[in-house]
Amino acid sequence: AKPLFTLLMAGPAQLGFRAVTLMQCALVAASAWLSFRVARGLGLPLAALAVLFCYAAPDYFRIQFSGLTEPLFGLVLVGAVALAVSGRAGWSAALVSWLPFVRSEGFILLGVWAVYLVWQRRWAQLPGLLLGYAVYTVVGGLVLGEWGWVFGRNPYPTVSPYGHGGWTTFVIGLLFLLGIVPFALVLLGAGQQVARLLRWRDAPWADPRFQAELLLVYGSIAVFVGAHTVFWALGIFGSAGLTRVLTVLTPLLAVVAVRGLGVLAGLTGSAVARRRIVLGVSVVAVLLSFTGLRVGFRWQRDFAQPGDVALAEQAAAWYRQLPACPPHPLVAEHPALVRALAIQVFDSVARLPNGQPRPHRIELDPLPVGTLLFWDDWFSRVEGHLELQTVVADPRFRQRWAATTLRQPGDPGGGSCRVVVFEKTCLQ
Image 1 (cartoon, helix red, strand yellow):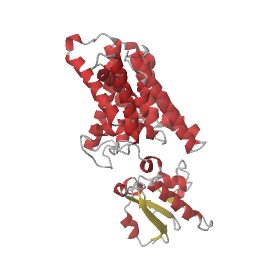
Image 2 (cartoon, helix red, strand yellow):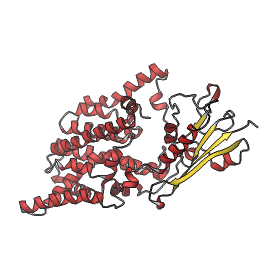
Image 3 (spheres, helix red, strand yellow):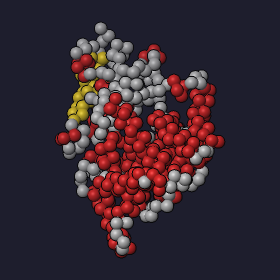
């Protein structure tokens, strides 16, 4: 689902997780700089504050310290917008063509670029939108022997195993993504754009900068939020309702926030008053992130070791105390457990006997005697489709270790998480 992301992260990953997070920090820094370039290219005053609004967005700041795909997706997206704003539509189309290979829903934004290129009558640049698909089709054909794999191997099921949710989840999620002040500025900026559209005859339709801002900035935001809203409300395409995916829009939303700040500062005719408004809003945007509000930073929740990761380390420490011979086959679904137990995730037969391919669920019957099953209360249930009671009721398995802790340290309201280790003692 994410071959370009995997390719680019393979190098830093060899140096460990900290190298990956440093790479993510570099991607976010580059995205913030490109956000400034987009704002400046659109002729917005106060364009440099786009950098501030990127870093003042709590969710975007937090995601730097992860191995997730959103920072790279956001960089490719804002980079493509920056190229278009600077008049290099062909390069923009070529760059955005790689979005589906960073995160698979990137394909929905190719339609936005297609409309933009058609509006500008740049017919020769339209094939550039297929560059990523063409390259990966050839690579997949040569490596996998399957030329249609790009379209035939969608890893996300049509019906999501995570269920479905409300229609407002992702709209409300924008507030928690950005924080109170940038969110309010985004509303102001978007409101001004709507007002420009309502003045239909006066709108600068022929201005390339207006076209780029309308379609590539506002259009991308609307299409991306709208698509995820539909996916989650209908329970399709593997959507889990995770609003963190909206972080990919932060560099573009920062541009909208800059426009909103310009609207606010323009309410006064005094240059001194405008400077005070800009300074005051900037200071408040930063300070509110450190108040402990739900939309800001909380040290234990955001920067301490999560409960499920701590449990994974404890379970791995218990395992390492066991006699080394004979070695136990291991089964685990939680990525933190896989990492702590040093399971080779790229070995397709590492956890199953006789060279069988890994199934979509944890199957108990094929496991050999002596297997240690590390069950957790999220990945094992949702991804592995294995309930705890199923293992408890199976006479072939006995419990060897168990622990429970808070999912978010210091926050009982965040719920708890659990890991239970079972050993398969017989075949019948």
